[in-house]
Amino acid sequence: MRMLAALLLIAGTIFAQSTDPQSTAPGTCSVDGTVINSLTRAPIVRARIEISLPDRLHSAQSDATGKWHVDDLPCGSVALGVSRIGYIEKASVALQAPATDVKVELTPQVVLAGRVTDDQGDPIQSAHVSLLTSGILNGVRTMLSSTSASTNDLGEYRFANLPAGRYVLCATARTDTGHLYSEQCSPGPPENDGPFIQASAGYEGRFDFTLTPLPVYRLSGSVAGAPQGTELTIRAMRAAGSAWNDNAFVTRARRDGTFVLPDVPAGNYTLTVETGQSSAETSAIVTNTDLEDVHLRLEPLINVSGVLHVLSATGRTIGPQDYKVFMWAGPQAALGHNDSGESFTIPNVIPHLYHFSFAPPKGFYLKSATLAGRDIISTGLTAAAGMPPLEVTISDDGGALEGDVTADDAPTSAWIYLERDGQPVRNGETDAKGHFLFDSVPPGDYQVYAWDDNARVEYSNPTWMERYGKAAAVSVAPNQSAHVQLTRQIAPE
Image (cartoon, rainbow, N blue to C red; front, side, top):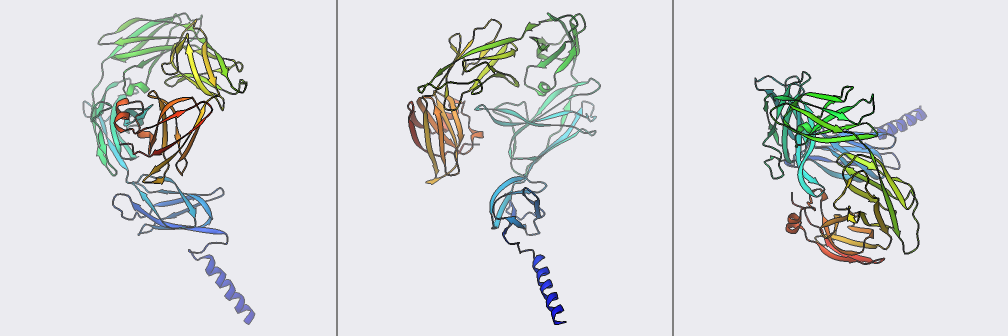
């Protein structure tokens, strides 16, 4: 009996230890903390805490005081995710387990909602509502399409889980029955300098739209130059910035090459047709009447050839797999095929104005790229039949630029922006200690900036850069290393 009692006592002790919420198995660690509202500092109840491991998911929920606890974790680096309906999710918080009293702040979401009706007050189902936000694209502040939504059967739409920011809402509709409605934007047409919906954290706004039917017109014409029996699809894309940009008008040509777009609203359009071997493009302006006799002529796609000149102090040779070349215009891109280390071809290019991009081999930099002696790096090029080969020169005599960034006399991470003659040359992030290294930098004189957030830097706006930028001047010599000390700047909202 004494032996049985002893065994029961040991078992009870083991059971008590295994069910203790504060205990962890040997070799494991625990993490605990609190979830609070970033604005009010109040605890957030029922926030979900998740830690994903390769073989399992650990989750917990904050209690009435915002506190939470997760155990049975591997000791070391873990990533914590915290979410709660009505707040912006914290997708990844880096921790070193074990950790105690970890404070996670969640920011209340922005909500923009409303209703879309026609001029008779009836709801418009499947109306297209675009959410645009003020942002930086290629160093220029502009209105960017953030997301979009369709209205339900009551004409309602809702954008949730948005961060604080400046927004514009635009609504339009193109129903299944062929009805077209005007575009309406709130608080006004999207312009770089506003007006905007100024939404701070936790803001909830309602914006209703009343759309009026658009008059539509007939757009017709013909396509010439197609082989007999070729099926042709004609796309008419509205050129002006509006919600219609993502919704082209499409039709098929008849056997004789003629086509009709029966219901097109007024506006400036670009008409295109492609066959895989040829293409055609033309502009058309629809005013307040039908437009006829729009002509397109198919021309063969072209092959853009290029010559690669390698300047190497060590006599290094380049293989066809060592570099990449491509051209792009908006969403349209043409990728090059490297014939050798000395030549390349960009096949099946639609005649158009393109940007030129070149990724050199490691240890080299792009020294120049020209077409008929004219620089194409900054200005781009027009692809056309009969054009001469592109001339591309790369060199390996570049230098290195190394530096360190501080804020309040302490090392800090930052985004580094390197420019020459007002043009961007290189950018990238420092490490956690504020150190960065750019290799294969073309020799020359540069301006170097350190910013807290590259997404807010209008680096292509000289006026903005002159007003807010504080650069350090540095010279990079061939095959030499330069060092620069920078102070991190806070980019204005």
